[in-house]
Amino acid sequence: MEVKDAYTFLRERGFTVASPKWDGGYFQRLEFSAKTIVDVGVASFGTKPLYDGFPGAKFVLVEPLPEVTEEKIRGLFPNLDFDYFHCAAGANEGVALFTERTDKDWFSGFHARSDDGSEGNTIEVPVKRLDDILARYSTPFGLKIDVEGFEIAVLEGAEGIMADVEFAIVECALSKTFNRTERFSDLVELMRRYGFELYDILNIVGKPPPDLDFVFIQKDNARFDLSSYSLRVRST
Image 1: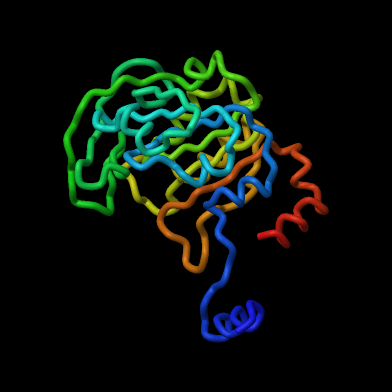
Image 2: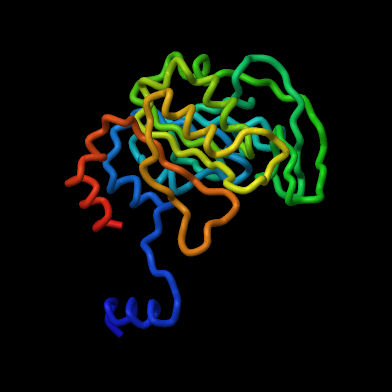
């Protein structure tokens, strides 16, 4: 069966067919020029599609979980050029209480989940501002933030570097996944104040999941031009 025939066959039966976006090829097609890629919220498995998408970049990895050590990440990605910060990112430097989930470490965070009954262990973790972490790194930056409802605080701690950010991938819940007051509209408003607009959604095929990964770029980026937008639509 040819690709076109397979596409029609699946569509006629109610399936949604789309090219994957959370992969290295997607980022390479966009031809971002970021020299330093910041991965906030590495968990125990890293973000391989992001690393694959920027093979020549310097990476800065930020993760507070005690068991996720630099040695563990180097074992997973031995060829990755990265510096590791064993801390959380936030609005203010200091120490904060953090819920560690040993069953699902990617659910660990500062906000309890309203859709999950597990409580986890409460630990203290150091917190640093991205402004301070990135002071000595080359620009432009690319940001990826996956912090279980703490994304507003992380971005508030990055105010000084946002003018040098080329793109930001931010996971945010549309549903009331976390016991917090901030909503997706607050994220959009903060990014708007920083001069960014929503450009794409990486993981939406069919019914949206509770959490989505949103791509923001600066509002005057040429990718918002109609010709560039049409090209992006055809390539995805």
